[in-house]
Image (cartoon, rainbow, N blue to C red; front, top):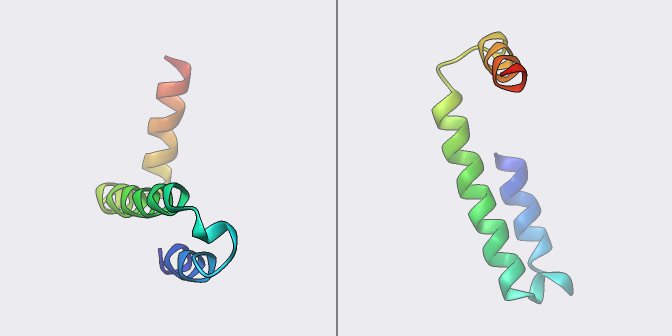
Length: 58
């Protein structure tokens, strides 16, 4: 998560970072990533992988 925030801070000082819509999307993605990490936190990697396999094979 820290890497995403640092990348955003660096990115917003670039020419592409002047794109307000892109910056809004990036902030939204960072928030979504944080919420997903919090939701999946109690589960082990194995449990998450098994759940993903079940969904893909359904």
